[in-house]
Amino acid sequence: MALDSLLRASLNKSELVRRFARSLAVVGVSPNLLSVLSLFFAALAGLSFFLAGKSSSSSSSSSSPLSPLLLLLGAGVFVCLNAVLDALDGVLAREIGNASRRGDFLDHVLDRYSDVFIVGGIVLGGFADPWWEVGVVAIVGILLSSYLGTQAQAVGLKRVYGGLVGRADRLLIILAATLLTLLYPHPIPAAGLRLLNLSSSFSFSFLGWTLVLFAVLCNATALQRFFYAWRRL
Image (cartoon, rainbow, N blue to C red; front, side, top):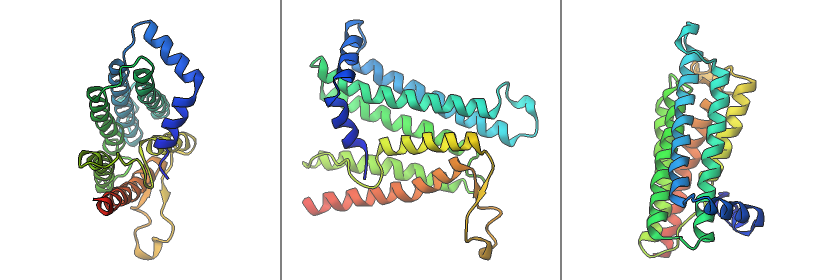
């Protein structure tokens, strides 16, 4: 079940989070600024994933002044900052009475760019090589699941946040995979593929297997949301 609705409800009820949001408003921070900053950190996360993957696959240590593990650590921090700021912008908007359709529209557009930056960085970093197509399918699933959630609202239904995975779930999974890759950066072969002679080529790090997971679950979520809306039209 997607964490998005649960997370949103918890943040709105948290007095500590609301107090922090009000303190941001006092110093002149706007919800739109938080949305833009979240996109900035998503871009940094994607760049860090890309550099980490390329530097770890290169035999030359001079390809990057930073080690792959340090770059992965930075990517994890940037993903955390993206998630925190993305959660705070809506809380801040409601606390200052500035929630608007324009802000909601901007937030969703920037979230999709953030998703592409983060997951695209993992794909371009080579974490799913040589099966880079898995990453493309994952990105398609992410975009379609988000699109169908908002498209339901566009045709007169409520916005759909349900399904197997939402944005909060994806970010949590990426953070967990990043941590596991830091602890064990080596490829992990797929169990059961030895009989098909694919075990050697179908071996990924935890981040690579995350793309496989997203390729399946995000597209399944898109189908869930489609049929959920279809039955109510």
